[in-house]
Amino acid sequence: MDLARRGGEQGRVLIAEQQSAGRGRLGRQWECPSGAGLMMSVLLRPDRPRDEWGTLSLAAAVALEETLRAVAGVSAKLKWPNDVLIGGRKVCGILAAVGGAGDEGEPIGGAVVLGLGLNVSLTEAELPVPEATSLLLEGAATLEREVIAAAFLAHFAAVYRTWNASGPAHAIERWREYSATLGRPVAVSFPNGRKVAGVATDIAADGRLVVAGRDGEGREEVLTVAAGDIVHLRRGDRGVAY
Image (tube, rainbow, N blue to C red; front, side, top):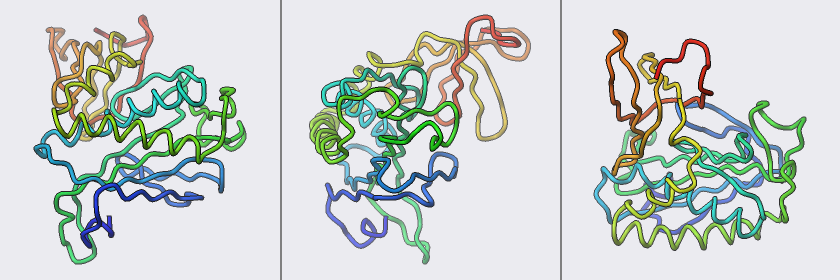
């Protein structure tokens, strides 16, 4: 982000060997041991309207799914809005940070910093939470981070060129194909504390999740979720109405 403020060019990539104070969604912090993960930030300066920039994390997730399948021989699924799963466990998180302010309050301007954190060779004991996994634990064909990074950047460059030229529709359609979220019951926790449950039915053109559920009085309700935590549920989970 500092580089973006100083006019850094689009396409600059930063890869960290160790993560000691990573920032995820909702200000969450996470760490990764040295050499065990692929922690990458990419500086982008999109040509598309700003209200489409939120779909860049979906485009990156599509590129990573295709990378893991082609290079590592593992099949991943995508959880809205920014997680990549293998066997229902999180192997990667993606965050697109748009704008912001520096020490003096100056805006970043027309830049997006796309961050990706992929668990590569973490052991079971090193995983941050039980719901996580790594390429090592999933029997990936390669754990060479340079190989995975190069393949991802090539895949993402292709997806990003189409996104920049034609909009997010193509990336969103591919995200639907790889989704672990669509068609299943979910619980949504909003930043303001509100919680709802329903069935995730679609992704809107702007990347928001469409959830069909019921309001507090039992009436059918369709929500489009722009920001919130999503928990995948099983049908019949206690207290879930949809």
